[in-house]
Length: 100
Image 1 (cartoon, rainbow, N blue to C red):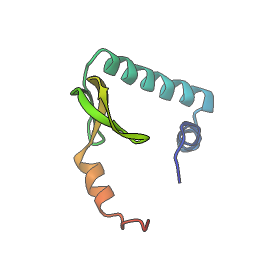
Image 2 (image 1 turned 135 degrees about the horizontal axis):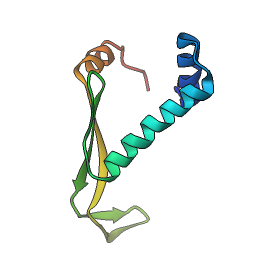
Image 3 (image 1 turned 180 degrees about the horizontal axis):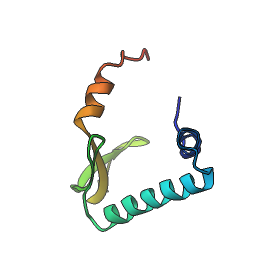
Image 4 (image 1 turned 45 degrees about the vertical axis):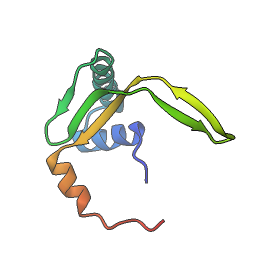
């Protein structure tokens, strides 16, 4: 199952009694601020949940699967990394592995 932003709004609204529009606005503002901080290169730390960080991937040489003998230069770029918090890790590790 996938939890969407809409599902989150409905759940929080039902649990708190707040209007869905208000809950949506709060969630959207939170996500906007997280995105803004990451775009500025800052770290976002949410205790007991995890840490979002911007890391730089080094430039490297890749292979074109359609032309295996051809090298393709891949430039360095910034990516967002997430490291789960301790409580989340302990909850997730209890899950049984999914069969592929």
